[in-house]
Image 1: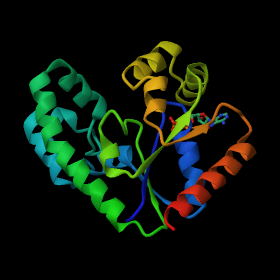
Image 2: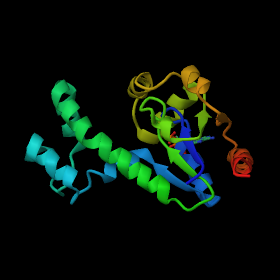
Image 3: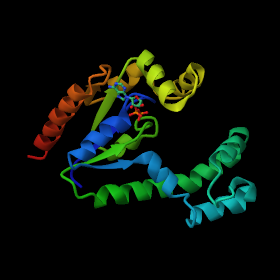
Length: 199
Ligand code: ADP
C-alpha cells in the first residue's frame, strides 16, 4: 500500500463516525483497537499464553479474555504489565502491518485513538485529526457510553491534549457541528485531497 492515512482524535471526537464515511467511499479502514482484540481472540496462541501466565481466572465462561480482570491485575503489577506488552505489541504490530499491506483500496486508513501516543504514526504517511472541543467530547462520549463526566475526563487525561494532538496533524476535520450532511461533504473533500496525493 502506497498511501496510509492515520485517523485519530480523542475519545468521543467522532473517529468511528468519520471512519464509516470513508468506508462508504470505498476506503479500507484498519482499526488498531480491533487488531488488538483479534490477536487475543479464542483460538489464538496469545490467549493460550495469557491463560498459562495469569491463570484460568482471566478467561470468562465463553472462553474469551476477561479484559476487566486482566486490566485489574496488570494495574497492580508493573512486571506483569510488561510481560503482557512484550507478548502483545509485536503481534499487534505484525497483524496491523499485514492488514495495511493487504489493503486494496486506493489508499488505506489506520484508525487509532492512540496513534501518536503509541507511535503508530511511524507507519502512516499523513495524519488526519478529528477535532472537537473538550466540552463536546465529554457530552458525546458520556451520552454514547453511559459513563459520567469524571470517567470520560480520566480517559481524556490519559490521552494527548487537544493542542498537542492538533500540533501533530497534517489534516484537521472539525466535528463540532451537529450537521452530519456538512461533515459528509468535508469528508468527501478530504477524500479528493488524499486521492490527489497519489497522482
Ligand atoms: P470516537 O470513535 O472518536 O470515540 P464516535 O464516532 O463514536 O467517537 O462519536 C462519539 C458519539 O458522538 C457517537 O455517539 C456519535 O454518534 C456522536 N457523534 C459523532 N459526530 C457527531 C456530530 N457531528 N454531531 C453529533 N453527534 C456526533
